[in-house]
Length: 265
Image (cartoon, rainbow, N blue to C red; front, side, top):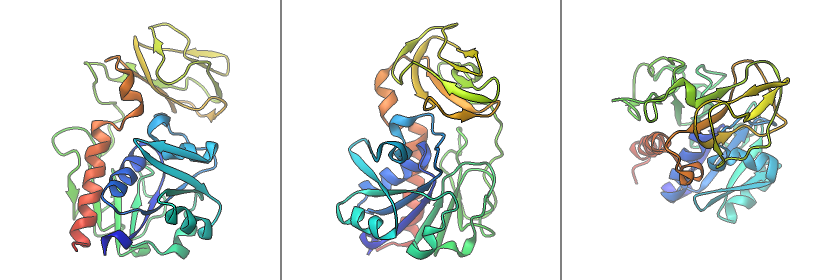
């Protein structure tokens, strides 16, 4: 039965969390997510990766809890919650043997996912080839084909250009100007103005347009040059900070569809 399916998800950032949330809401609740010891999610209010730091994280009414091992994962499932593990290599998943593996790291390349990892292996975005290293690929690029499920071939290549919001593209994304420790006194949901110091990296101020700070990397994180550290939303709707985006919902819906295509009873 679908309710007994075991889902393994590599990554617990924004898109991975949306997929986990959608599966959970469809009564597929035995979900374990793997993350690094220092997750780099910017949209932290909608990322289960925050459980790595805080022990638990709730996104739109669904709670994820940090697990220390496979036995604890099962206890978390028994409590009706999603499990999040610090396991960058996803080694724990070999013992858990998921029915479905979703690679949602969004690294723009395959970091080790194989077709043999589960009966159904799903790759999000570019870097995967359906039929070779995964069974299906879900398109993650905004546009006409967003959320399309590919049984052959690959997703569209990454352009490096953020999607436009109110006509704003690159200027709405904050990137580290240099390598160093990112520090900030701002919080997600704050209103910021152009030229305002949102944070500092190695003594360098970073700031962009007027809008609501929809996402912000956790202060104290070591960053590399060009890494995304913030997201300013020019629409100014604070509610968008703590709810799943339209893009993430589309991708998550396609992950659910891919699962239901395979496990259709």
